[in-house]
Image (cartoon, rainbow, N blue to C red; front, side):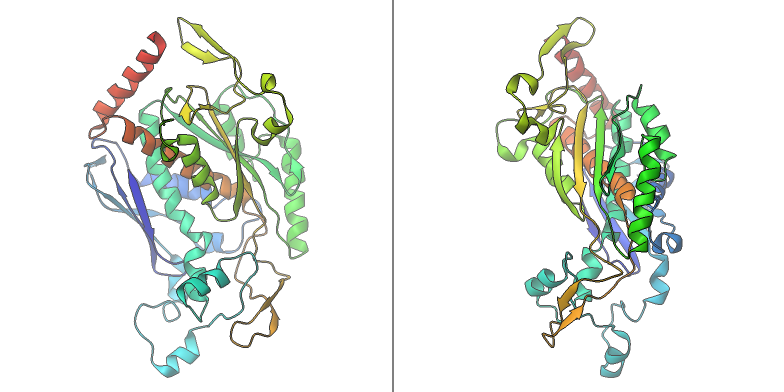
Length: 390
């Protein structure tokens, strides 16, 4: 199962084509649009979230509410495109138009892909880089993740995300009875945080950063429940599922770190306080008494909840810009400013949930017979039964 995305931040639309979904999966545009709306929420988002109201159009691969087994094509229009038709148009410009409308960018922004991308592809106008490297592209990654989540829900696998830290404000790890409770409370939070005390402090930190023309980052956590044991593999480095999840997490714009279970804390503990003891009972079969390793051993799922966290750096577009260099004149300048957020951690949690959901679903489709949804469901149930009785 795979997908590709295409489109620029201020282009006419963003597009994704998804290949490898089983036939017979119930899927509607509303399943996708609910997730797109979640991505646009969060205290600290910029003005663009008021301009764009993202909605996906299904252009292929679905008939009468069910996947066909053929590629699924999704499109999300950029409503702001009307203001960028000349600047971002596909047709060539004459010399006069080029000078008038192109808004050439020659001042690289620290922390962005601008300069490196210009060096790689030979662009003298760095708008050619920033339009594609923009986090706007995560819109259709969330759309693909929504499709993956719909598939996982049909297999009895649930996924949720929440924010653990913003700008140094850490949430208490409060207990919750179920993922449903976690989802309900964090969806109602402006910062997607389960701890109401930390929630207000996080919002205050975001407001302070905005007032100062600055930005702040944070830590998000994604939890997956219901995974059968043995998904992934130990036999090759590129088949280890936890490594795929780690790669997916740091592929998100501005993400710079990832950990599973107790993560980096394991470096400060003896092995007796890191590894999870194995037990068995006739109801659930094998299980771990703890889940310090976050649902993985040897690159494979253990059947315990998958717990993965990602670190998001502060957004590098600042309203009090850092110093940079003009690539044409080589003179120092304050970096150019594009419309931005002071904090996008709550929205990034939704993106993280989406990319993790995709990798989980892709691993399942790769490992089990998956041309038809009913066959895949039966295969997953058989795997669960087999693990219980092994």
